[in-house]
Picture 1 (tube, rainbow, N blue to C red):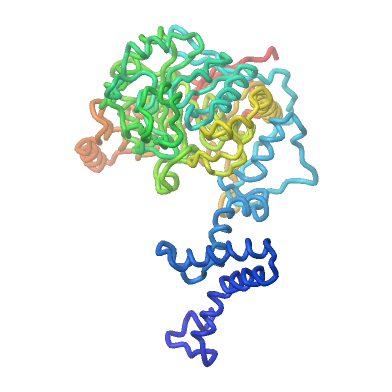
Picture 2 (cartoon, rainbow, N blue to C red; picture 1 turned 135 degrees about the horizontal axis):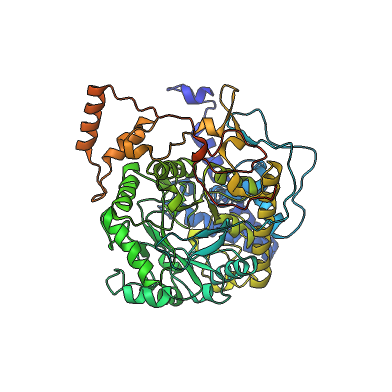
Length: 600
């Protein structure tokens, strides 16, 4: 370390350190003065203009009180602010390596761009990954792998109470609101969804005219602000909702409990992005931030949430209704599950949004330190439903940095039914990850309400890119499924993926992650006792933890020396007849999903 940083009483290196310091600090300003004087002597207007600008800037820097660095380094201090402003671009274009994710790597972005443009997405000379690094994962291919003809993988969402089930792709556009995104971006996404036969989530900002223009299938997301179906006080308006929900273009209804990037925070659309058109769509005033409350006013307990989704199901004519959440306190989700079981009323689907998900604007502390990541959140929801014996009644979707065929295949192998992507489809319409979504100055016209900036986004060509990205990503997914020796992604299991651990050992994901036994929570005999503890804390009449029940459970466990291990052997009649080219140990993730069988 330099001596100047460790010596508390440094000796001056020159006889006049103060004068040298003044010269260094003011040298740029002095150069501007000399340039101005030279311009006057030589009658050179260019020198006069440049030097005069530097002199005026230097005088302003010395007299202003806001920035100490400009007072100490007039004129020259601005170099710091210029470099600071352009730091993200300098890093992205000059310094960032291909694999560094901030939040998406250059390789991930390039993959989306190539597939969206329908150009080759192949690379040469071998992988850039260190295959021996810890946490590296790979699929185990089969000796009977084969290419698949059908690449349009689909599922049907809708339970017993649903009158209008929805046939949807396993890869869809995640929630992004009009207001956060520009009108042209919304139109490009929806037209692309229409062309590719997949579904577009509206986000909580209501259904705009741009969502409707091309007729692509919609999932209408209802957040805490109830935008598009609210009264003057901001509460849910059943009549307004019913009028819009019966539209044939609206295929499903999604209640947003929380968002991955800012769970518990609500949402904020800055005032500068609220045009009259957005205000009309959301039914909010202009000139002020549009704030979504942190919690819902339509319900306050798990049992009331069940009643609310049934109300939405009835008002929409029996369309699939579910909810989206970033998992927080696990017993709160388990309380919802208990309320489902006691009322015998189940949502048609649940979407688990990971903490790594995107947002147009959120505090850094929430993006970095609040909420459960996608994999852990999904597994908690999945294992709870399996342990409660109701996994077969509810479809599960996931979202959180999903852009490739591997990302989709991995989550379906863990038990998901479908995957959503937001930023992946933003890349497809031209996003360059400038991370200026909250400033209304998006350089590509994707996340801005500036009419001149968004005009640069050509809807027809970008819609084709959206459809191509979806098609080519499913093509990649099909290649993985075929390589594993299967016919449909729903046949994927955790034992089809291996993972390298910190110590160099390798485990299948079926052994790396915990997978609950069917119905184990109902008997409180889950092999992971923490699930039993959280289950007894869950109260269907309140989101608050029942700590008395936990104390009683722990006391009972000590008194009886409770064994929480459950049998791990699977009876032949408990499994599904799976035609699996990579069959190892049966249906580990307990999804019991329907998929096409072969004639073999």
